[in-house]
Length: 85
Image 1 (spheres, helix red, strand yellow):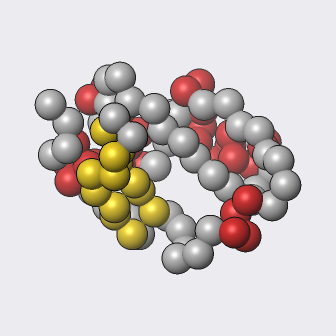
Image 2 (spheres, rainbow, N blue to C red):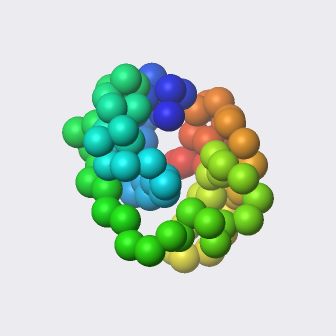
């Protein structure tokens, strides 16, 4: 989130989906630290984070519903932005 926050102006027409098991107020505090709290709304239904195998963070880049790239773990924003026109 630190990397995305530093380069948020380059993520035009991008939908970021963030999943966390933390309470909403803690998640917003975390994102605020990186200047991102105004961009996202959190909701939690069930226990979705426990059904996700492979650890966090993970980044999945889709275009037209097709997986283009998967980044397990933290990654620099520049690497993510390589997949943008």
